[in-house]
Length: 357
Ligand code: HEM
Image (cartoon, rainbow, N blue to C red; front, top):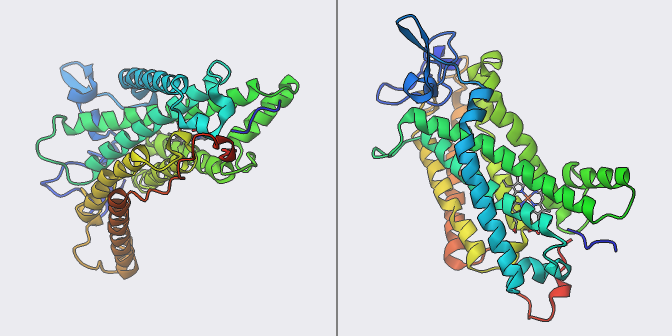
């Protein structure tokens, strides 16, 4: 922040193999757009006479179901907020080392609350990506959650991730409004442009970091919410698009490591953020090597039949798996060497040379 101025199931080979569970978004019957999470034991059922018919998953039903983990997210945000304030008061906050004017806790409480929402958003994004990869790849036998419950939790944590990112960005914008001295409409306009328009934030590391965060937010919304209109766009289109949601996660981590002032300097906390990416890389690799869907397996080059993709598609899949393996090795190297890309901690009296803007 600147210092204040003053259906794809009918496709040959695309049905999950018998020993496999249905992958998320699978259609149980032609024309039926229910997911495995729509099983009666998972979300309840509409009762017609003696027959129990599964109720369709809608955005409204999932928003309702999101309340419990949304409340947990708010508790986590409150705890992080309290921790950030305690560190500022104890003069151990690296945010204040980077931006000394932020030592005024009351003056910048919205900024610190925005940071807390950012951390909750990143944690929820981590959880939802892990759940998603467990659904679409191999799953450990002894998991305490059934498939439908896992899928429902994946959807609710995804919705909450979007809400947490929005809260993070809105509070950042609100802080900009509060510290601007121009007229109301000019303040609102400037804060909106700086927080939400790519290229609108024009100074320092934020020139890259803010658009990276915005890209994550703007991609998360369609890639997450298209699920609720999959019967219109077709389950296969939805599945193909939803795969790119991993990009949202990568952008989120990149944005955090680039711009978060609590991970500004190298040290154990920044290295831990890197370490947390190892399970994601491992699960992604496992998902690519043993996908729930037979058609995504790399057993041998597929013939160039319509929809099969032929050798180029096979080569692309192989390249994807090799790239993810290389990324996992790179993350391991960062963790083991501690060379995590952080800035060196400045001597106590030179904080003003480390400007965040
Ligand atoms: C419109 C989109 C976004 C905007 C305008 C935005 C804004 C910011 C700003 C200004 C900071 C620096 C705060 C500091 O001094 O540490 C920051 C840090 C951060 N952001 Fe974002 N962000 C956006 C998207 C995201 C997304 C998508 C995520 C993750 C899911 C995220 C998570 C974080 C985290 C964890 C930090 C570190 C906070 C800290 O160091 O305490 N942000 N963001």
